[in-house]
Length: 97
Image 1 (cartoon, one colour):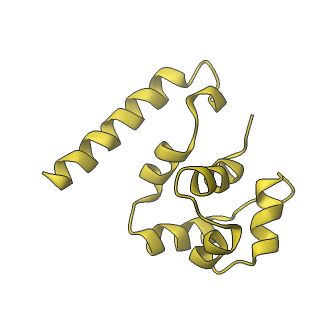
Image 2 (cartoon, rainbow, N blue to C red):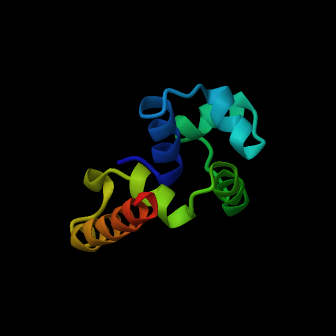
Image 3 (cartoon, one colour):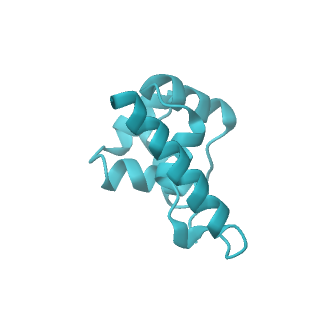
C-alpha cells in the first residue's frame, strides 16, 4: 500500500508525465527529496501540500481524491472514499459547464 505522499508522486509521474524535478518545482523541493518520497523514505508535509495546492490551483481534497487509488484505502473506508471522489468529480464537471 502506498502512502499519500507516494501516491502523489506516482500520480504526477504516471498520469501527468512529470519528472521528479517538475514535481519538486511545484513545491519548492529538490529532485532528490521527491525521489525519496516516491521510495517511501520521506513524506510531504502539509506545507508542501499547501504549495502544491496553490501551484496547480486545485483544492487539496480534490488532489487527494484523484491521486489515491481505491485499492490503497482500507475496506472500512472504501465506500466513503468512493462517495467523496464522485462528489468532487461532479463539482469539477460543474465548473467546466
